[in-house]
Length: 600
Image (cartoon, rainbow, N blue to C red; front, top):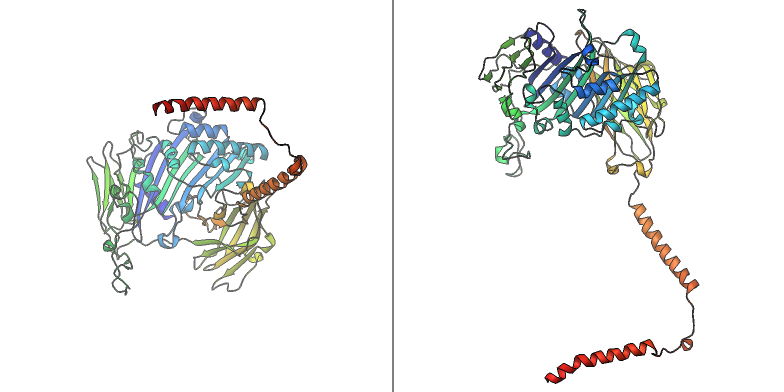
């Protein structure tokens, strides 16, 4: 929530008189241990009337036509890599509302008159988005699609008369590898396409070298309360956590990141070492100095000329550092600066037609902005052993010392992972509830849709109550199905990815009306299944062919071959054609030997 508040504060600091058709913002915030959070935000608006008339203006036509054809009223797409370290980095950007699970996550509200029609339009949407973003979204079939009930709510405005025909569908691809081929279509949706503005900082080598990164696309209808016409708003968000020292290394001499040589590592001399080649790295004390050009490899190529055409500032770079830390903005043209000492926020309006760079001095350890800790923590893992059965354990911690909370918990399991609902158990432990356990006290609501083999997965959704300063442990058992040999992937021995669980904080409600809710996603699971030895078919074929060859050859010889005594075999004598051929050979031999005799 803090990052969202800083964005809203930055927008108010630049005094935007009216809503613009396109604006973009960048927030830079140093994190402990030499990390840097970079949050990019882009917003494009298009009038609903112009959208229906195929006049998209700043809204990308490629995406707009897909939404029209699939009758999609609201869309949310996520590409995520890595894990957010909440204990070290604090609250998630945007309170987790712009974050997705590992891989690809997609949910949308589709306008349809029946479930079958909604499924058909959902299939059209996933196939079209698969081609647009160069991703495997076409693999989101019925086995990976669910219909959530409590955890997702529309962010845009939908008339009450149309809510009955809206169908929410949700799909995940936890095994999808996010890479540069997904970043390029993301940039093409922007008006300046990475040539100017803050999007000029995007580089695949920097983005995918981050410890954690997520790309989000949200399309929703927005109707201002002032009576203006409704607009279709598309918001693109990129959040990443970069290692400052790693990003500042030159790529020319060291294109592949390698560990530093031993003589360049600061060792902890208070520890004894067995040899000269051993070193325990010294913990970082001061936060290192950095600049935009060093971290991203380039400076910002000015402002996007398509933004702020009505005289309104719509592009800015904000840095969240203490007032004691020195910030050096650099540009050949004038720019506007706005400071908010209360939130330690400094915002700079990007100049037009000139590069912009920002340098931040080194920060001592005693001067640091305190991190706001999240309300809930969560961890999820697979328990048990063997190839037949297993279990899932989810630990959710309420860090609030005074108030209890309610959360919505969502799991989308593959069909070959068959949970037993009667084994579902919620156990609460803490200073105020040392031994309270059981679903009757902690599980308030349950929605369960069992899986159908090879047709649909398991949908489990719960509403959980967690007392103050307590930990809730959710466990259940499941069976592992045996797949057909054609259903195993090439890397079957690696295991099968299970989508992360989605957790939403239901109470207490947030005070910020602009907040989209507090979300949390666990890490994905790796499920080992009974895997056959795929070399056995080859061995069986070879063995069977050998046996068949020996057996068939022996029987065929016994049936076809005629056995006779040796004295009954007639003696062969040359006659006829054989005699003539022998005489001809003798004549040719004598002819070739004659010149050799004359020469002697």
